[in-house]
Image (cartoon, rainbow, N blue to C red; front, side, top):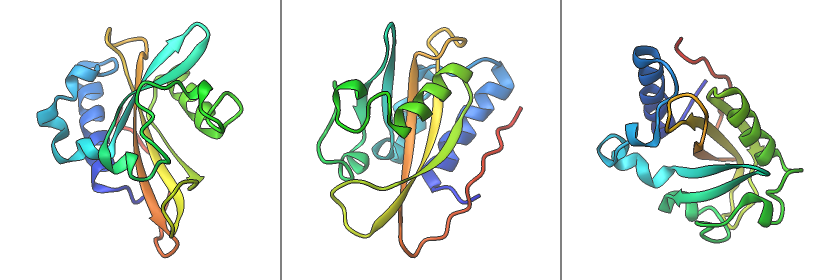
Length: 156
């Protein structure tokens, strides 16, 4: 598997917390000091459970650069192509329901030319360390010439 530097660093931090303290890390375990230069490469979405929806809370500048606009404050259900029938929604739902990190590839759809795929790391976060209430996503945008091997093994 080949992940971006940001994906590797954030998965390592998530896994170390999970391994040493048990449960899910909260958003507070990812301080600005921890995130450092990686903060521009993440988005954090709040989980809205009833009915299920996901709301963009924070979107790093590198992520916004690959979107049609800054979706901060918007819910996936209200964004065309990102609602309950989308692959993004199904990946978010799976991460929410099983509380495990995931790494998925989807075709890139956005304003930047030359990108073919988006490889995204999904990290569940929980304020109470048990029930997922936020999901951090860490996308990596792949050009046509990049070779990426997909797979994920989490430390237990």
